[in-house]
Image 1 (cartoon, helix red, strand yellow):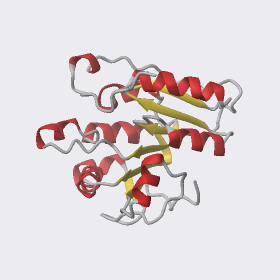
Image 2 (cartoon, one colour):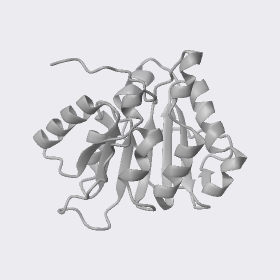
Image 3 (cartoon, one colour):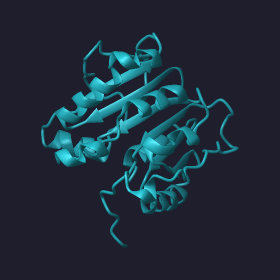
Image 4 (tube, rainbow, N blue to C red):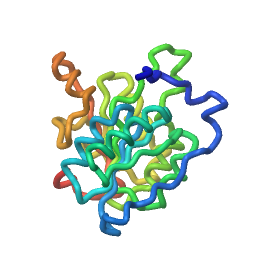
Length: 218
Protein backbone atom coordinates (compact mmCIF):
# COMPACT_ATOMS: atom_id res chain seq x y z
CA UNK A 1 0.00 0.00 0.00
CA UNK A 2 1.23 3.48 -0.82
CA UNK A 3 2.57 5.35 2.19
CA UNK A 4 0.49 8.36 3.22
CA UNK A 5 2.31 11.62 3.81
CA UNK A 6 2.59 12.37 7.51
CA UNK A 7 2.61 16.15 7.03
CA UNK A 8 0.73 18.47 4.69
CA UNK A 9 0.71 22.25 4.69
CA UNK A 10 -2.83 23.29 5.71
CA UNK A 11 -2.15 26.81 4.44
CA UNK A 12 -1.49 25.76 0.84
CA UNK A 13 -4.00 26.99 -1.74
CA UNK A 14 -5.35 23.46 -2.30
CA UNK A 15 -6.52 23.21 1.30
CA UNK A 16 -7.76 26.77 1.75
CA UNK A 17 -10.87 26.11 -0.36
CA UNK A 18 -13.96 25.08 1.63
CA UNK A 19 -14.64 21.41 0.79
CA UNK A 20 -15.93 19.89 4.03
CA UNK A 21 -19.40 18.35 4.05
CA UNK A 22 -21.96 18.06 6.88
CA UNK A 23 -21.92 14.78 8.78
CA UNK A 24 -25.16 12.82 8.51
CA UNK A 25 -26.14 10.71 11.52
CA UNK A 26 -26.57 7.02 10.55
CA UNK A 27 -30.28 6.07 10.63
CA UNK A 28 -29.70 3.14 13.00
CA UNK A 29 -28.50 5.47 15.78
CA UNK A 30 -30.94 7.24 18.08
CA UNK A 31 -31.71 10.83 17.00
CA UNK A 32 -30.36 12.22 20.27
CA UNK A 33 -27.34 9.95 20.62
CA UNK A 34 -24.06 11.51 21.84
CA UNK A 35 -21.62 12.74 19.20
CA UNK A 36 -17.86 12.77 19.75
CA UNK A 37 -15.26 13.95 17.26
CA UNK A 38 -11.54 13.27 16.87
CA UNK A 39 -9.89 16.26 15.22
CA UNK A 40 -6.93 15.31 13.02
CA UNK A 41 -7.61 11.59 13.43
CA UNK A 42 -4.80 10.24 11.16
CA UNK A 43 -4.92 6.40 11.52
CA UNK A 44 -7.83 6.90 13.96
CA UNK A 45 -6.82 4.22 16.45
CA UNK A 46 -8.48 6.32 19.14
CA UNK A 47 -11.69 6.69 17.13
CA UNK A 48 -11.87 2.95 16.41
CA UNK A 49 -11.41 2.08 20.08
CA UNK A 50 -13.91 4.70 21.18
CA UNK A 51 -16.56 3.62 18.66
CA UNK A 52 -16.17 -0.04 19.64
CA UNK A 53 -16.50 0.81 23.34
CA UNK A 54 -19.56 3.03 22.82
CA UNK A 55 -21.84 1.52 20.14
CA UNK A 56 -24.65 3.84 21.26
CA UNK A 57 -22.60 6.90 20.30
CA UNK A 58 -21.68 8.45 16.93
CA UNK A 59 -17.91 8.78 16.64
CA UNK A 60 -16.55 10.99 13.86
CA UNK A 61 -12.92 11.17 12.75
CA UNK A 62 -11.89 14.26 10.79
CA UNK A 63 -8.63 14.82 8.93
CA UNK A 64 -7.16 16.90 6.15
CA UNK A 65 -5.49 13.90 4.45
CA UNK A 66 -8.08 12.22 2.28
CA UNK A 67 -6.05 9.00 1.71
CA UNK A 68 -6.17 8.48 5.52
CA UNK A 69 -9.92 8.90 5.47
CA UNK A 70 -10.37 6.43 2.60
CA UNK A 71 -8.38 3.74 4.43
CA UNK A 72 -10.22 4.37 7.68
CA UNK A 73 -13.60 4.01 5.96
CA UNK A 74 -12.58 0.62 4.56
CA UNK A 75 -11.45 -0.56 7.98
CA UNK A 76 -14.63 0.72 9.67
CA UNK A 77 -16.72 -1.24 7.16
CA UNK A 78 -14.62 -4.38 7.70
CA UNK A 79 -15.05 -4.08 11.47
CA UNK A 80 -18.78 -3.32 11.07
CA UNK A 81 -18.58 -0.12 13.08
CA UNK A 82 -21.65 1.61 11.71
CA UNK A 83 -21.36 4.28 14.42
CA UNK A 84 -17.96 5.44 13.11
CA UNK A 85 -17.75 7.98 10.28
CA UNK A 86 -14.88 9.85 8.68
CA UNK A 87 -14.82 13.20 6.93
CA UNK A 88 -12.49 15.75 5.38
CA UNK A 89 -11.82 19.03 7.13
CA UNK A 90 -9.26 21.79 7.26
CA UNK A 91 -9.86 22.81 10.85
CA UNK A 92 -9.09 26.47 10.36
CA UNK A 93 -11.18 26.75 7.19
CA UNK A 94 -14.39 24.70 7.26
CA UNK A 95 -14.98 22.94 10.59
CA UNK A 96 -18.13 25.04 11.01
CA UNK A 97 -19.61 23.32 7.94
CA UNK A 98 -19.45 19.82 9.44
CA UNK A 99 -21.73 20.13 12.47
CA UNK A 100 -24.77 22.16 13.41
CA UNK A 101 -24.45 24.61 16.31
CA UNK A 102 -24.72 23.05 19.77
CA UNK A 103 -24.79 19.48 18.41
CA UNK A 104 -21.46 17.92 19.52
CA UNK A 105 -20.86 16.43 22.96
CA UNK A 106 -17.08 16.20 22.91
CA UNK A 107 -14.16 17.18 20.67
CA UNK A 108 -10.84 15.32 21.06
CA UNK A 109 -7.67 17.04 19.83
CA UNK A 110 -4.94 14.48 20.46
CA UNK A 111 -1.25 15.12 19.92
CA UNK A 112 -1.53 17.78 17.21
CA UNK A 113 1.50 18.26 14.98
CA UNK A 114 3.97 20.48 16.89
CA UNK A 115 5.43 22.06 13.73
CA UNK A 116 8.74 22.50 15.55
CA UNK A 117 10.42 24.95 13.16
CA UNK A 118 9.65 28.55 14.09
CA UNK A 119 8.76 29.35 10.47
CA UNK A 120 6.08 26.62 10.65
CA UNK A 121 4.42 27.76 13.89
CA UNK A 122 1.75 29.51 11.83
CA UNK A 123 0.55 26.05 10.76
CA UNK A 124 -0.31 25.01 14.31
CA UNK A 125 -3.97 24.18 14.56
CA UNK A 126 -5.26 26.05 17.63
CA UNK A 127 -6.06 29.70 17.07
CA UNK A 128 -8.81 31.95 18.50
CA UNK A 129 -11.19 31.52 15.54
CA UNK A 130 -11.05 27.73 15.85
CA UNK A 131 -11.64 27.85 19.62
CA UNK A 132 -14.75 29.97 19.03
CA UNK A 133 -15.99 27.60 16.28
CA UNK A 134 -15.58 24.52 18.47
CA UNK A 135 -17.37 26.20 21.37
CA UNK A 136 -20.27 27.14 19.09
CA UNK A 137 -20.69 23.53 17.94
CA UNK A 138 -20.58 22.05 21.45
CA UNK A 139 -23.75 21.52 23.42
CA UNK A 140 -23.91 23.35 26.77
CA UNK A 141 -21.72 21.25 29.04
CA UNK A 142 -19.87 19.77 26.05
CA UNK A 143 -16.14 19.20 26.27
CA UNK A 144 -12.95 20.05 24.44
CA UNK A 145 -10.38 17.38 25.36
CA UNK A 146 -6.78 18.11 24.36
CA UNK A 147 -3.59 16.09 24.86
CA UNK A 148 0.00 16.64 23.74
CA UNK A 149 3.40 15.19 24.52
CA UNK A 150 5.11 18.53 23.77
CA UNK A 151 4.90 20.93 26.71
CA UNK A 152 5.36 24.09 24.61
CA UNK A 153 2.50 23.07 22.32
CA UNK A 154 0.24 22.23 25.28
CA UNK A 155 1.07 25.54 26.93
CA UNK A 156 0.37 27.44 23.71
CA UNK A 157 -3.03 25.73 23.38
CA UNK A 158 -3.84 26.52 27.00
CA UNK A 159 -2.82 30.15 26.54
CA UNK A 160 -5.09 30.42 23.51
CA UNK A 161 -8.15 28.76 25.03
CA UNK A 162 -7.80 30.62 28.33
CA UNK A 163 -7.00 34.02 26.82
CA UNK A 164 -9.25 36.62 28.48
CA UNK A 165 -10.28 37.84 25.03
CA UNK A 166 -12.05 34.48 24.54
CA UNK A 167 -13.86 34.48 27.88
CA UNK A 168 -17.14 35.04 26.02
CA UNK A 169 -16.98 31.56 24.41
CA UNK A 170 -17.46 30.02 27.85
CA UNK A 171 -14.72 27.39 28.15
CA UNK A 172 -13.94 26.41 31.75
CA UNK A 173 -10.75 24.48 32.58
CA UNK A 174 -11.85 21.50 34.67
CA UNK A 175 -8.45 21.30 36.38
CA UNK A 176 -8.63 24.96 37.35
CA UNK A 177 -7.13 27.94 35.48
CA UNK A 178 -3.81 27.04 33.87
CA UNK A 179 -4.09 23.50 35.19
CA UNK A 180 -3.41 20.16 33.49
CA UNK A 181 -5.67 17.14 34.00
CA UNK A 182 -4.01 14.11 35.59
CA UNK A 183 -4.74 10.66 34.17
CA UNK A 184 -6.77 9.65 31.14
CA UNK A 185 -10.50 8.86 31.43
CA UNK A 186 -10.67 7.82 27.76
CA UNK A 187 -9.13 5.18 25.51
CA UNK A 188 -5.40 5.68 24.84
CA UNK A 189 -4.40 6.59 21.29
CA UNK A 190 -1.41 4.90 19.67
CA UNK A 191 0.65 8.07 20.20
CA UNK A 192 -0.26 8.15 23.89
CA UNK A 193 0.69 4.49 24.35
CA UNK A 194 4.07 5.19 22.74
CA UNK A 195 4.60 8.27 24.90
CA UNK A 196 3.85 6.35 28.09
CA UNK A 197 6.12 3.43 27.10
CA UNK A 198 8.91 6.00 26.81
CA UNK A 199 8.00 7.17 30.32
CA UNK A 200 7.23 10.64 29.00
CA UNK A 201 4.52 13.01 30.21
CA UNK A 202 1.18 13.55 28.52
CA UNK A 203 -0.09 17.11 28.99
CA UNK A 204 -3.89 16.91 29.08
CA UNK A 205 -6.54 19.62 29.20
CA UNK A 206 -10.31 19.26 29.62
CA UNK A 207 -12.44 22.30 28.91
CA UNK A 208 -16.21 22.32 29.38
CA UNK A 209 -18.47 24.81 27.66
CA UNK A 210 -20.15 26.90 30.33
CA UNK A 211 -19.91 26.93 34.11
CA UNK A 212 -20.62 23.23 34.45
CA UNK A 213 -19.52 20.53 36.90
CA UNK A 214 -16.59 18.25 36.19
CA UNK A 215 -17.73 15.53 33.72
CA UNK A 216 -18.70 12.42 35.65
CA UNK A 217 -17.33 9.95 33.13
CA UNK A 218 -16.21 9.27 29.59
